[in-house]
Length: 440
Ligand code: GLU
Image 1 (tube, helix red, strand yellow):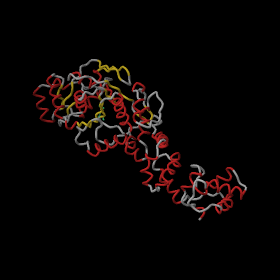
Image 2: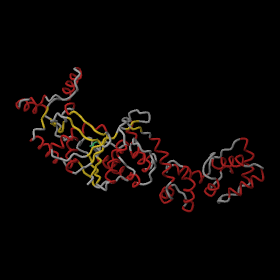
Image 3: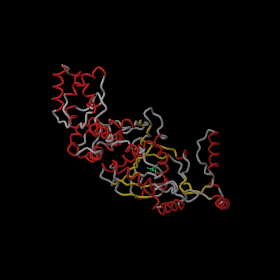
Image 4: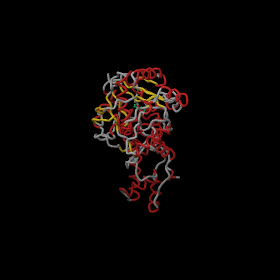
């Protein structure tokens, strides 16, 4: 059975980069009728916060990316300790004592000599006596001993990958304070939870190589791996610093619709064009991980606004009725209000400005050369409330009285009534307009 997982660390809010990972894993599971696990990677007790766990869930729920179950790494520490013991018994686990400064010095020396900065395994040569002493002095941490051979896999996005394990440092799996690190926790979970597909960012490629060896050592089944490219800004600039402002919750607060965000992220970086999808089933149906490329993917948040606008245009009144009620539109005007505004908004937040304009009347815009004409025309306008025939009857009367026609007739009147040179059909606007401020 196809099983995938999204495994955020609850040390911050999730952003568009994380969403790419979540969405791809979710779509693989849903397309196959499989299981999608939300795994909270919270082994770092200091940095993990409950507030972030809650927000991650809220974000995913808002997007509709629902999970079949939640797992928390902090509740599975005994499983990781167990795996560590097994690796220790197999002789694949060894204790090290170098401080970060010492390691840094080693790396610099290696680089100076033109060598790759790979951990030299000096700890393997320490005598038991020396180790006991060091353990007492500073405590030891544990590395996994890689088999120095090529590690290969067929990546769902990157294609055939081959990494020489000799060019990679033996990964630290347990810290001196006993904290289990992600590399082993993730492997134990993926193996025990039967994860069949792992999609994550290409910053994890080296992790994958080492994890494949750890999975094999523990006798687990190696899942299919796929690594998506990292997102950049529209000009190809690194997005890492700005990701903080591209949190899902911020985009939501700015009025982006979930389907707009999902439609963009489901296609960005693939050979298929971005198409607006109006529901999750369509999104899943059109998904094919093989269409994604290895090149960095440009993300421009501005693309989300037109997609949001287009999505809103597809909605029936029921889908926005609560928003329309909340801003105070009377029930009997709701249907008409939506019909008139839906093609003229970018986000739901824009509805308020429209209602304020209808309710209070707009600041009139009257060009000096039209002043006399507008005054004459307004004298012919009956008092509100207006109906759907008001505009036709009124402009016919104005035409007759002034001799103006076409644009010269309609445009000054539109600007006087709505304050704008464009917008919805005036025949539809009139019944919503509660006041004409130009009339005084
Ligand atoms: N917690 C890890 C991260 O957020 C998970 C990576 C993975 O998918 O294995 O980077």
